[in-house]
Image 1 (cartoon, rainbow, N blue to C red):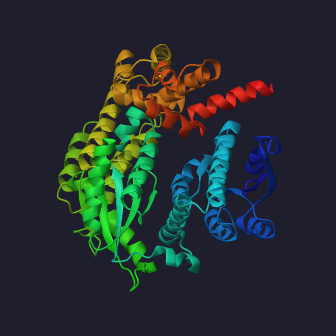
Image 2 (cartoon, one colour):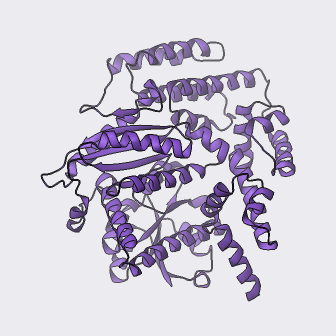
Image 3 (cartoon, rainbow, N blue to C red):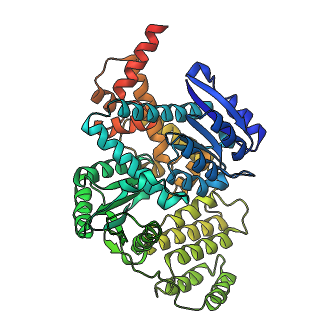
Length: 521
């Protein structure tokens, strides 16, 4: 049995997690539940665990400290983060540190917890299988890659000391080039193909990188980004070729930020230089906001700062915010846009100003629909043009609501849309076509649909289609491509990858599981 530990400072959360699933019936043994990281770590030293379910913000020792120390006891440990809505940034940091997944604690569902635990087991068994086949060259290569990836993650995000055993595996003869590759138009891609599709693309990018660069270190980050370390003095040139190959193979656009990291005489990475190179690559990547997507930007030795006095800019922006209102919004936006285009502000500052303007505008209407989604759209804007378009859309919606040209409650529209989707899910459905069917704007439909269902439009459609595919796999002998077509998927390769991402099983394995369950009953 796999040993599982639960750590959270809220007793009701620990109780809820413990009561969610029949642990022993699913092959798990609870190794205890604890109120803080120190108590949990003391218990782990007596009996190591396989899976750690932990809160992030706790007294005495928080979740990040616990993860770092627990990995020293068992470097195969799989971590699941318990997160609240307001801790999402912490959860993303945890995913960068190698956590398998995170769960929103106050909306925890038993099937969600079971699926995440099953995913942890799949990773554990895959690693165990790799070790058992350690004499094979491919298995040794995979083990080496995994070790190098873990070491780089610790250098970049862990904040702790790198184990001496990992240092020899991180040599980069001839120098080290560190790149951040970002998928362009990510939000549009996810709206068209679902939020999981970006993970599929990142997996395929990783495979292409390892196929082209045997000695590379490659691993995905959140929000459509990939970290890539290449050795050799010509790393920048090879990166450019690899970027083009990925774009052509996957049919996507990529922007890259690149910086050379300092290495020692024998090619070993210098600890301090790694973090510096990563930040410089991040700053280089952010240049796409003002200079355009699809390019390879090289980081500079010194970060770009504001060109004007912070106090002066704050006073000017304060005056602009005072003018914001239904009638003055366009004028205020014009002033903001004029200053944004002078490039005296960083992209981070521009996004902050846009978010503050929209928040102030909606502050007078407490019934503002999904303001957090509007602000998230601003934060994820890849270019200044995209940010301006989304800000204008937020202002336009405010004006229409003030003039009562939009209903306060979109429930009837969304119920009509859900009926339409249920009747036509095997056909080609787009956000545009469904919003037109219920006669409301695409932007308003998108906001109202998520508010009513808790899901983005395309994720709702995909979940419906995958549910139908499960029924077909369990109840018929149709071929996999026939199941995909009958469930509404035109691309069987995409269907298979998406199905495995959602269920942790391939369609063939899922069908076999259903047959075995049927025989056992």
